[in-house]
Image (cartoon, rainbow, N blue to C red; front, side, top):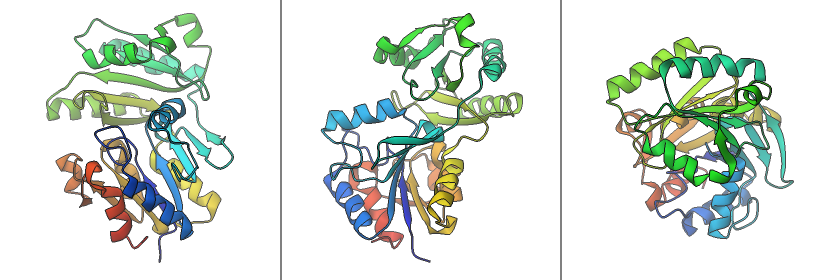
Length: 286
């Protein structure tokens, strides 16, 4: 069955190390759309952060400058229709459940940030335990206008898009143990871990509503579009893409992905060498 939807991760997959998108990959997305194949970006970024990244490149969502039909953002917490500019799907963590998450992170003494519900996801409150955590501090500096220290009274009265714990680099066995323990203690939520897009070493552990992930949100989208799972091609570069890659009819990783993922999925050239275009060709989309 021919592919009908092509979905790509953004950072480290479509976005190059120079923080741009190669013209060849842009042309590939245009060609896919001309062939009637829906194009989707699925990113861990908030919609604000994603739009800001495009603005820095002089590109606009949905135009020929960045030709996609949909943007799945915040790791699946929301979907934007690029043509209309409207968000038609979102999943937030209810206020009554946030304390369960923050109590656990407090016990573990993990530095974390609580991001407000869509459309205000760029705004967050944070708690630091004084750990040696440069990646955490760097992110606060980057979004200083939107960040403020934890306010307990406000925190548990409002829904949130996600709670993000940022953990300094750990050996693989300690990293796995931490993720497994967190998934057990917070089993009523969706926990997705990834390598930091800032220092490329720290661990970002993102905690969402139980129904949020790239694969679950893509499944909602394809049902809406009348597309079958086996007609979906996906490409990514990190652990937060793994569920989508496994769910898709065919999944690829770029060569700059962790070795553990390259052992599981077909590998194409890196984000700096048109891996997205190669995946489109190998999958039969082009």
